[in-house]
Length: 168
Image 1 (cartoon, rainbow, N blue to C red):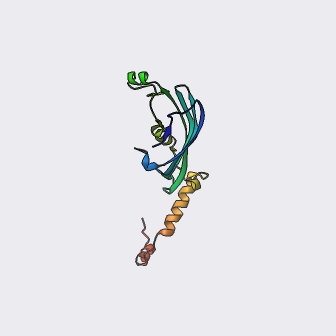
Image 2 (tube, rainbow, N blue to C red):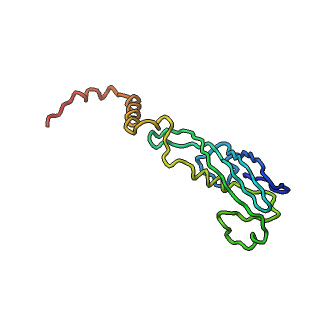
Image 3 (cartoon, rainbow, N blue to C red):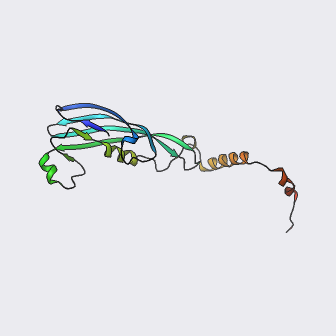
């Protein structure tokens, strides 16, 4: 879990740097592996908390052109605001999406959901391996077919069939 301790925090800016394993974040997308790093600044002003930072994690993707597995670092900006007000927290059903309401006696702010969602949104729609990015699609197809042709094994028992010519 990506939790930031807020109990007894004084007004002002606090630097935040956290790292957790992907397996510690529930419902994380299967593309992600390794460590999730979160760094940024937590700003406290009275009952208001704001976090601005960046989350990053490695993802294993499959190239849409060559079907080669490759690893890419996914980074996402994280911006979240909280209001510590127990009365509003108890009265709110779903809350506001712009500002999260928490109880005044909360010890931590959990950013796990926000980080999971933002990293998932920043997965590329077109997953192109680095070696295929600067090439045209036709070049990738030709390279793939050359690789397949080299890998084909010729069975000499069928070589005599090459000499058969059918007249139409």
